[in-house]
Length: 281
Ligand code: SAM
Image 1 (cartoon, rainbow, N blue to C red):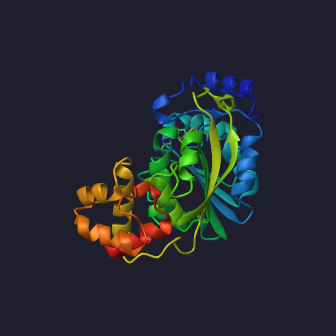
Image 2: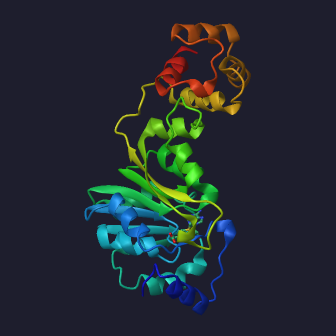
Image 3: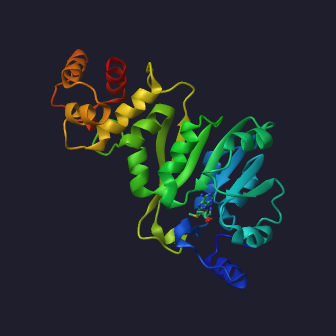
């Protein structure tokens, strides 16, 4: 069965009486070129791949061909019967039914991939939880090499922006702290069934061995990052003093120490400046 062929997919879905659940971000890929390219970028034959949301297995099949092993986590148990059909020949794939946000991914990686040289996460992510999933993967400091995922184009641009530019947000700084980031390629909305209202892109986050900047207190650094982007039009002095309860005079002194004007806005700081400020307040 050609899993990327729209007619085969439609036939399969209707034979099983499957209906899409928008609330689960179910937009399945129907473009035969996208999954091989994603799988190629994510893994080689010594890689264990953790997939989130296999759907009917179109990406899973391509990962299975290239990786040593694939473990795919799917929330919608209605897909069990379908996946048994579509992945019948993929012997190195295991499906776990559950919520990727709630399962112990560290344990799953330890249990399944101890014989692999490296671990990748690869997915066409459900759009309603793109950033929470990416942040959960990074903050849990999972032993992974890269995260290669499809996200909405706007999210891709935000996640992969340069910190210190207008396109960046708190999530950009957090991603940059943990990973080197890159937009690999764009994917048009017509590549999905049902077709969403927006285009998408595949991004790759290569996990750094050491964080991008050194800080004395990681928790404080991330509180500062959040505060800096919370009210983007206000000056950093105003928003950080309000949200973190830091004295304004102390903030002005810290900014001056690192060569910044007291009128600077939080979104204008680079990673190095955010780190230096966090260590001074
Ligand atoms: N990989 C398939 C493809 O590319 O055609 C499906 C991708 S679809 C955008 C997202 C998939 O994630 C759906 O199968 C959906 O049921 C599943 N999903 C949604 N929320 C999830 C969660 N919290 N944990 C695991 N899977 C989830």
